[in-house]
Length: 172
Image (cartoon, rainbow, N blue to C red; front, side):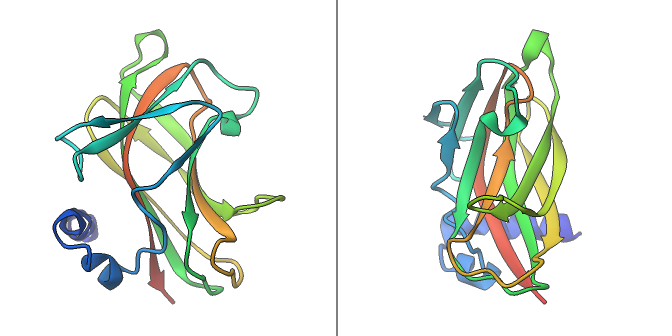
């Protein structure tokens, strides 16, 4: 039931941006940054907001973070705040014809060295759009701009489509 409520609330953002304040979204959901590859924005009426970021990963990297999609957290976070990272994703093309892949690292971490994770978790995706959710708690107080959401993609040669990426502060 919580998942259904979240999907409905996130869908409402397209129609009513004021809903972002009610949900306490602490990042710019529509402005991700791609590192280690090029991303291309494309129209896709099947995903929330009607736009998808397509990221083509040429091959498995030396590190999973060699290709990553990130979103800066623009609001301060207090120790113990429960955070929710939620994003729409689908596998456009998998390595060797694979129809599913597991995005191993989806999390919130420091935006500078040592890039310590606040929390992270996996999410399996396939050819249909799926809302991936990972929850965790902030381990300390963090000023605006010192955390980021990140999705590591350099685990295989693959093409991944991403919709909006949300980080919601659910509070204490």
